[in-house]
Image 1 (cartoon, chains in turn red, yellow, blue, orange):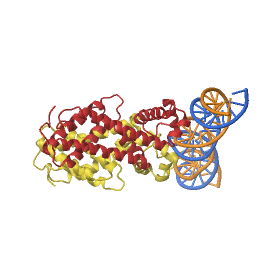
Image 2 (tube, protein in one colour):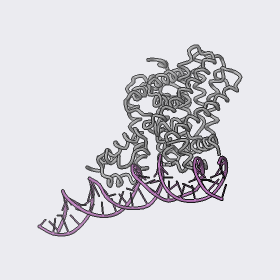
Image 3 (tube, chains in turn yellow, cyan, brown, blue):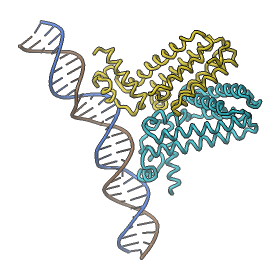
Image 4 (cartoon, protein in one colour):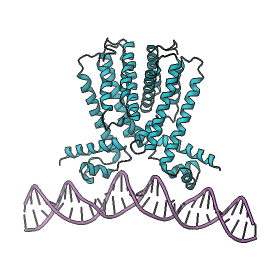
Length: 194
Length: 194
DNA sequence: TACCCTAGAGAACGATCGTTCTCCGCGCCA
DNA sequence: TGGCGCGGAGAACGATCGTTCTCTAGGGTA
């Protein structure tokens, strides 16, 4: 097993275990068992649990935003794309292992004690906001910043609501709200389109 | 020290420590030290940590909603009250010990492992939604359910955004969004009022 | 064939956790 | 006054944590 594969297996195991059970509830030995990588190699690649947690969050950030962007980009109309974000959320909420936002969960658990984790979470939220701002601008809103911030609030709210209630309809409600906000802000006409 | 005072001191200590550092990062001995209540009494009143955590959440739920309702009820106009929720959030976000939603934090940390905690979190969110529904109805919206759900999403999103960014302006953005949504739903004229 | 470096398996270590137990001193009732 | 029970302080216990160490086996090089 080369280094790249060991890293991948470690991060895969870390992601599924940390996300499902929380960070503190999962010991390093459990990651070793799930990954099949020895403890020695684990500590060679990630010299502490905190480093591994931050690496898990940063890789998940890239993948999560990549999957979202790929889904949204498939919509031909730029006016629909901001709303497509919420369609993607609804699909995500329906997945059986959905358990809320990994970044908010990690921040609530460790944010006050780990600067690295807090930084990864802040970076993720900032990137999402940047991405939403681009979508809103492309949809024809002259001043996209405020609306994008509103959409970001709706995204986070929909995620946490779905996590707690276990139902996916918060995505629908957030989508309807986003449509109203976009229309009020002067976006091109697709607001409200199914 | 009688039982009521011991309970109060234990829950006070649990609330400030659990909320600031997370549940798993705080040991029972630290709660004993902060409360001044002996470990023996602690376990007489709360026979396990999980029971204490759930009691902490349920007491916080009552106080949190009580403080919100008191603030909102001071607004003379029922049409303004749904928006006053976000004014209260903005004040809360500015407090130095603000660290996000205690319920979402606890759920992310323990939700998959503790049915009692998960139930307390779900009950809290359901009560908040019930309260918002009443406010929206009183503001003159004929079908308050969907709008109240949207406001609940905005509330949760504003809280988590404020927690991660450390800035209180997500409350303003959420308030503006709520005003647009209420007006679109046919609420009485105060929407958008400062 | 003899040697060395690496990696794996898992024991070991010190710390800390939730929980229980021991011991002691103080206040109440006869 | 003497005994009794309750509560406080904190040691103790077993488990588990993050991290390191030991031991051993195997493969590449002279």
